[in-house]
Amino acid sequence: MDAPPTDRPDVTVVVATFRTGEPLLELVRAMERQSIGTDRLQLVTVDDGSGDDTPTTLRTLAADRPWMTVEEIPNSGWPCRPRNVGTGLARGRWVLFMDHDDLLWPRALEAMVTAGDRAGADVVLGKEVRTGGRTIGLDAFRASSDDAHVTRDHVFAVSTPHRMYRTAFLEEHGIGFDESLRRLEDVHLLAAAEVHAPRTAVVADEACYQWVIHGDNSSLRHPDPLEYFGAARRVLDEIDRWPHPPEVRDDARRLLLRTMILNRASPSGLPSWDPEYRRAFFDAARGVVLDRMPEHLDAGLGAHDRMRAAFFRSGDLDSVAAFGVPERIPTTRPQAVAVERAGDRLRVTVRVRLLHGDGPDLVLERDGDRLLLRPHADVPEDLVRSRLDVTAELADARVDLLLVERSTNAEWFQPAAVTAGVVEGPDGPVWEATVVAEVDPSTARAGHPVGRGRWDLRLHTLVAGVDSRVLVRVDEDLALPGPVPVGTDVAAPYRTQGGRLALHVTRPSGPKPTPAMSSPVSRARSFAGRLRRRLRRHLR
Image (cartoon, rainbow, N blue to C red; front, side):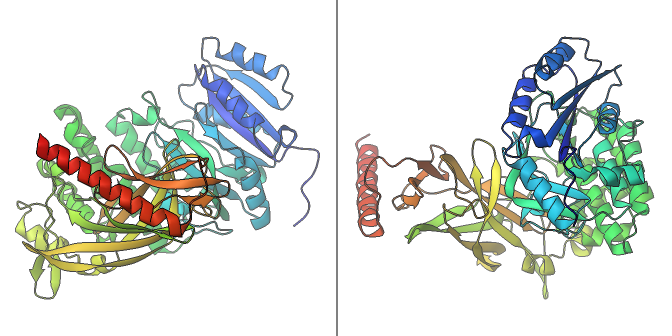
């Protein structure tokens, strides 16, 4: 493709501000640390009538930063208007939308612009990390892509505005934030852009956007049910316009059914809400389910979600609430059964079973050649027989070992071999998987070495509608090998105070360990430690 013009920045970062305070300084510093250089970027901040010293702070920051543009508008009450104003002021070939209290990794803009230009893309989705909460759409960042599919590659599952758009694409199609919306405006923008079938590139080998979750995030507040599901209908209107086959539009509707409605029946959601608000939310959600979510969508859900969808369709609020408490939500509790050194890598073997939320194995029910999921004994029999056949789903289960940077919550997929199936437990058949992962600290971050600090191991399990991301446990009696090299550093496996398996990456304090010397020594120390602990318990 033609070389980019040199008389304009490569990328404009648009930020809506409102009574931002200290995070403004961190945001500007994040721009100054960008490897792309401030001569190739423009930062546009649009203050939404803060009424405090935020505009003054912005103007002071911009005074000696020619790459920074400051605009002020009367308060609109939501980020849509300031983002649209910022887009109108953008001089960059690309536009990236950021929230005012989030951050970028130093190589984010360079990696995203390079990927977008190489692919001839209209949209670039950089690896997003949710610090302080569970990252949304993790599977979209399994691998980088120059042409990612909207549903098959999980692009639409990343339901945030934090992606980069080609400015000419936005202008050509008149795409912007709908200023009449106060909820789901981000998802609406994604759905509206997809009407024009954009080419989307994904950057998965570099952490790009750090979405910082804290107590006053607007996304954590209870929405007005009528307003929220009115916005949901607007999003569905855009999906109806997609120029894709019906099955792709169904995949998008099914995703919204799961994320906007079924996932609300979680311990921190609908079961914990005030009864009056719970009823209002349920009724508004059920209206969307009955009007806009055809029942054939349920067949593509996992079994646990099919059960919850049946409760919504039948109007059974009591069951939705009852099956949203922790002890009734199926989960996993992964356990490391071996951690060994294999050259300069660690071979980690993890075993996991599907469990009830309160701990016991989730025992499946045999029905001839079928296996049925019974999340709890009082699931209606007709629902078990008609909706909870998991025979095929168990065969399609997906299990991944993730290496997680503790300070940021950035998760990285590790290469692994998975063996999964149904085994006989003491009370009947249960689903079990064994994961053997090769963790090479020199390449564990999508081909890059891990940095200094603490790294946790987390197992991501998707089976029968259960989406579980749980830290890996390790018994104190399990012998752990010595450290492995990471460039000039070492990565040492250890057991946390909470009994989880983790790595500590640090500068070595002595000679770099070798397989011949470290493994026997660590085993001897581990045995001596176990012996001391047993003697102390005995002497008590």
